[in-house]
Length: 187
Image 1: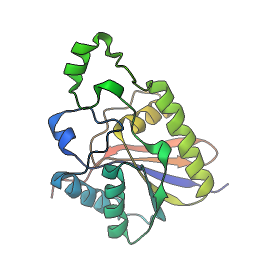
Image 2 (image 1 turned 120 degrees about the horizontal axis):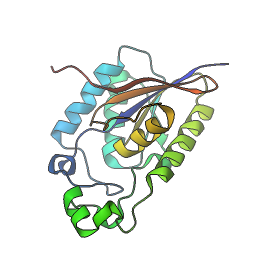
Image 3 (image 1 turned 90 degrees about the vertical axis):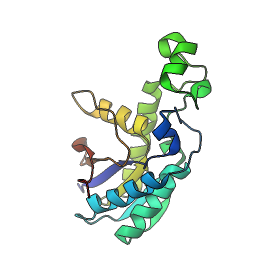
């Protein structure tokens, strides 16, 4: 059986990340720090050979993917709709504290259940593996999706996934988590 390696990368920072606002499916672009984080991700990944990049359709992920792909000299194979971030519904654009004050217990109207995010994420990663068997694929996605997937695949809870972090998975008939939240050392 061939081994497929995935590098799950959280997109670079946005202004909403800087301000602590829930983004979810709102399309917020990278800021200058986020573009620098994308270049740093590329430096982390350049220690291995990668075959292609796939991204969420949100611009912060797609732009991170374009920067990484250009640095690595590979193509962005496309965007995959189900890599999109968890939907926070009515809470998007608010801080978590403000949202929880409005909706105690965190039950925001329109909030996508975390269990559904994990199922969607694992299914989508399975589709990526099927389409790229035996390859090394950089997958640019979002923090909640990556964390939900890692929580399902690891015996211990995953940490908060930081902007520009790389978490590696391997598929060889079953999933193996190889690393979590790897970032470039300060320049």
